[in-house]
Amino acid sequence: MKLRYSQTSPYVRKVLMVAIEAGLYDRIELLPTDVWAPDSPIQRDNPLSKIPCLITEDGLALFDSPVICEYLAHLGGDARLYPGPGPARWVALRQQALADGICDAAVLRRLESLRPASLRSADWDRRQHHAVTRALHRLEEEAGQLPPPEAPTIGGVAIACALAYLDFRFRDECWRKGHGALSRWFDHMAERDSFKRTMPPME
Image (tube, rainbow, N blue to C red; front, side):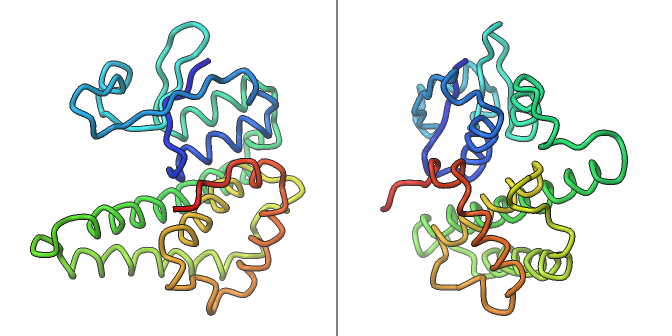
């Protein structure tokens, strides 16, 4: 298998963590990909020109991260990541959606900060920031429902990646303030081998 990726993408990190958890990491060839290059090969594999994009051993291009993660968990036979039919499955998928939403808003803020100052929108940044703040409050309220770090679901993996991305790009905003239970859960989750092995490079 081949994975088009960037080391700084939280969505890629989620895929890589799942690959490690499912015992498939060594079967994946990592292909650094610049989605902004006009001739980027990602356009051939994913018409949306987004990463991550997994090319399976059968040549099928899969995107985006929720699809890839479920494929890898199925391929690796890791039923722990995706609980069977019932309430636990919907909780895990809902947690993944909330975490991916945090990443969506944070990435949009990051991209906005890279635009020329004259083109930046403070209202747009504020809207995305508020979305992240509300999501963090919800996770804090539901901290008791988070999967144990010793047996993470896809929801736990996704939340860990989202919080780590906030540390990576918005450390000065200190998401931990007012979110003690969530912070303690994250600190335990950060001890997993899959988390440590997928740290983004320091910039």
